[in-house]
Length: 478
Image (cartoon, rainbow, N blue to C red; front, side, top):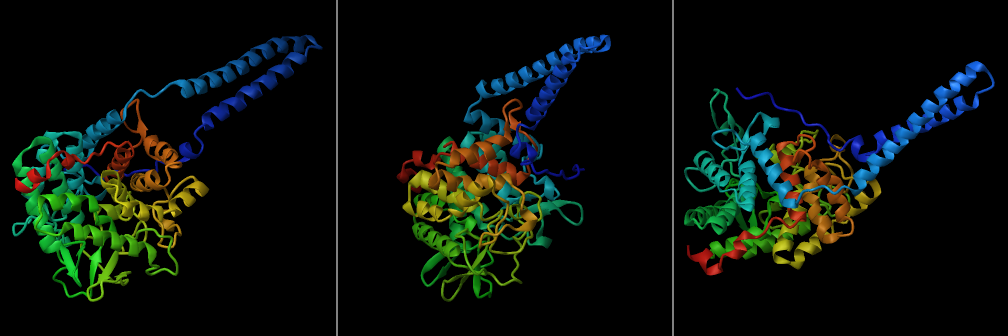
């Protein structure tokens, strides 16, 4: 029996806005004691007041001790450096992540806030992290479970959701469309396999990656007027809808550059080009709003005839709605296929910044620079809300802060606003970590925990392009 799903509080509370409330209260107390002591000491005109004078000296001493104590504690906090490194932070939170979110025995990644389901997205995140940290045992267990339980029998793509079925057993939740693939997870799993090959030189990793890549191209890439586009799933290529469902946060140019070396038979460079074009249009067009703040949207469609990017009709649905990213941090987010800048789209600046870090493509910076709304909002409010509409209004149900928002948008700040980036990193990401326990200060949801980690890894330059260490002819020939 799985335990009840936990709840996650908003960790950006009063302690963030008013970090010195306790010290302020003690200072007020100390000053009050000084005032009272001075008053009692002055009252020495009668025998009774003479006795009070000694009490006044005691109260005065307590006031002095209180103020000295506050000054000492605050000066100690200022001069005492926290004794940890970036890799200690990333490794210790990884260790605790495995204890909290990986099921004992089979290593499947759990989302406790959603009934302990497992998604292909979650498996891909765990595999990427294991590859980056060189944790071969965890990578192999995750890789094996994923391919044994999620990989389709008819191709090499992955069912997106696994969990407890109506009959009480566990498997792919086909009654929820769980056998549909999610192209972001398929991409990330293939990339993780390439990175695993780079680390451990087992040719099977590379063979598996190439098989996945070929089926991504065959079943998730839709060509319109000669231009290939990455669809959100494996249904878009064959359905009768007049548009292709696209999630801009699924687009990963850095992965396609690597795929082009492993699978040179498919034009992955053209997919990278179209990805930049889709992101640019989705940011600059007003879509279903009157204006745009150049924020990437969670979802868009591409007209199958013209290739135009458009907002999806209100009734549009997909089995992927409710994916782990859609659930966010357990806040009030709806699962509509909207144009909000929310739990999906917040990953766009991360993906662009990672590509810029690895490949320095000027298109990454060009797009990131357009997201200056994030700097203006952070400078004005000292925070970002979890979800914004396409024209920059706060979505009331998601007005709180989320760790995943900062994990994704730190990519924008580090590339396009490096002056503000340290403040965002220290106050919103590094703040989450407690070096005394080597863990997050408060429990984070599955999604927040992953994206806080990815954001910290990106900012501290701890997410290297492992594939770059392998000669191109080796990647293509294995």
